[in-house]
Image (tube, rainbow, N blue to C red):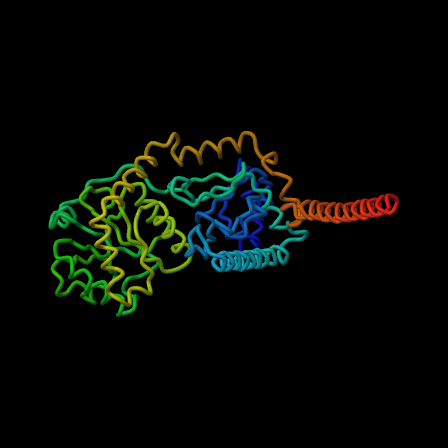
Length: 408
C-alpha cells in the first residue's frame, strides 16, 4: 500500500530524514530507506539472536556452542547429536528468513522499476542493535557493527505497590508470582497442566501464589486458600518488591530481562520459540530452574523446582549479584543506543565497520582451502620422507652387503 501511494513517498522524501531505523524481520523498511535516499540506517533486532543474519551482522553463528533461536533447548554444552540438531535448526531458520525476504522483494519488483535488492540493502546496515544483555546471554562472536542493548525497554526504578497488591504480598512470608506473558494464555493450557499447578500450590500452604489468569469465570483459585488469581498484575513493580520470593514464567525475553534487573529467582516453563533458549541461559547463570512444559503432566518436577527455589539461597544471592552488575554497568543501554545513533547521523554510513570476510565464500572464510593445502603438503612431505628413507635404507643395505662380500 505504501509503495502504491506515490504522494506519500514524495511527502516523506521532502522530510529529508537524517537516519533510519527498522526491524530486520520486515525487510520493507530497507527498501523504503532506499526510496527516501536514506543511506544512514541501522537495524534493531527484538530478539537476543536471530539465525540467518550473517549477511547483515557479518558475524557467523557457531552452532557448536551457541544455541540458535529455535534450538536453544540444548544450552551451550551440547552432545554430538544436539550440535547436529542445533545446526540443522539454524539452517532451516536461515532458509525461512531468506524466503521471507524474497516475498518482500517480489512486492518491490512489482511496484517499482529497477527495484533495489533488499538483501544488499540489509547487508549495508551501518549498525545492528541486538536485544541481548551480555551479562546474562550466551557468550558469542560479534563485530564492530553489532551492539547489544538488551534491557533498554526496562524502565529504571519502580513504583510502590498500591494497597491491594501490598496486602496480597503481606498475606504470607513468601510469595510467588505466576505469569506466562501476553502471548501464551494460561486459560488455553491443557487441563492436566492446570490441574498439576493447582495441586502443587496446595502443597505449599505457607506460600502465597499469585497467578495471572485471563478467565475469571474458570474460577481457577476455587478451593485453594493460598492462590490469588488476577487478570493483570503490575509485573515490573512486583518483581522489584523485596517481599516477592520467585517468579514462575514462560521465559519470554522481556520477563527474563526484567527479572534479571530486579534480582528475582526464576522457574521457567518455556513454551515455544526463543523461550527455550532464554530458559537455558537462566539455568546457565544460576538464576533459576527450568521445567519442561511436558513435565507438567506429572506433579513431581514443578513441586521439586519450587522446593529448590525456596530452600536454596544460592538462587537469590546469584540473582541479586546479577542485578547489581546490571545496575552498576558504566553505561545504560538507552545511552548506548542514543549515542550510537547520534554518531551514525554525524559520521555515517559506517562502511569501515564492514569486514571483507563477508565477501568470502564458505571455503575461504573457514580457511578450508588453506588447511586443505597444508594437509596435502603434509601428506606429500610424509610420502616423500618415506621414499627417501626407504631409498637410503636400500642404499645402506647394498653398501653393507657389498662391504661384507669384499671382506670375505
